[in-house]
Image 1 (cartoon, rainbow, N blue to C red):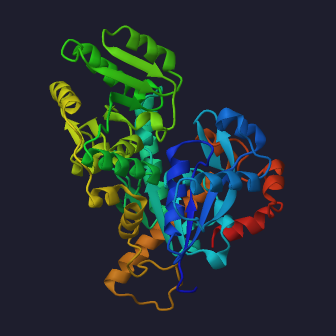
Image 2 (image 1 turned 180 degrees about the vertical axis):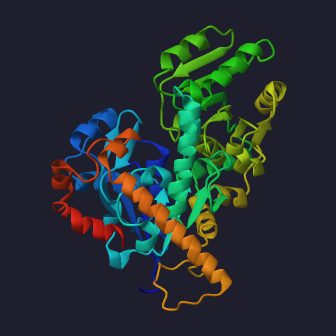
Image 3 (image 1 turned 90 degrees about the vertical axis):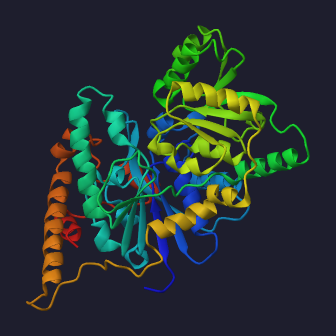
Length: 476
């Protein structure tokens, strides 16, 4: 293995699906490769045409992986001021309607040749490994870093028998991340606590938002009116994204907030109900279809109100801060990173929300310093990632090797015992994930142990190996 490191960034979604696990890993890959000192491969799911039609917006579909790769590259190149130099590979995947998620098919570790297997970054490692049946990540890669994006426990608690399901899911998440990852990075304290984990926001904002912030700073320094609009909120239009909390607060205090005008932007399954609720208020609450937050329409708003407590780290709050706006949000672990910025106003109760909103409308935002802008950038996020992942330290856990001596000091015997227990745990997971009846019982898409004929044809994959050979390979 050469001294030059290779990062393989595996994620659970891809553009044109505009979700955090398609956008943030894409930026991470671009900035890891930016200085040219590392080789980086972004590994993203490939869906059959039928699944693409279910997932991707505006009837966007692709006939080949090469066509989708072109779309992804154009998107990122339009948003950064350098030419990204990472490579892109696809793994076979299926869309689960029940889980509203993309799930891997077959052994996705095979996307990276053994001679290139160095560092694996698993974006949503629990999601990638619930049904993983293949090579053991920590055997193939020298270091495996998991990045926790989603609070799955909060989502399943809303389902029927949610508490029971959440208890089982908590154990499953702990199990697979422990046996397949060396280190876990949780984006905020709003995520499940996991073994070998650290809390660190390793996300940045699209550089376009920082450009808007610099423009607004220049306008303020020149004595110009930088912010000519009042308050707004943007987010997927479902009740769980903070709309219920916001409308309840506005309804309860509409007499004290009589001059407030709020514009809501979003699209989603609860759009009609949210619009009807807003129309019943005496306040001027305007509901609009969703738009890209980078749209010039949003540049002149002064106050971003975000009462949501279901996010892990709210991307739109970070973007609003980068544009120089005042952000009003709840005192919640998902907002901990933003407390360092003077324009972030945290409320602990309803009264504080009202007072902070009135104050924000009457004040001008505090100009961001160069250091504060840097902290919001992807350059800083990449530095935080390298530190949190302990990538600047010597590799602490090499691949498993067979011992040649029968006697071990106490600390080595303890390590050997732990390794034996982990090996047994891996064996159990592989046994369960290799049974179709078990996989389906726990929510896997049927017949996803191996790619089907269409996926193999799309990706140019060979036919699956014989069962005996496959079993032998899994144990290595």
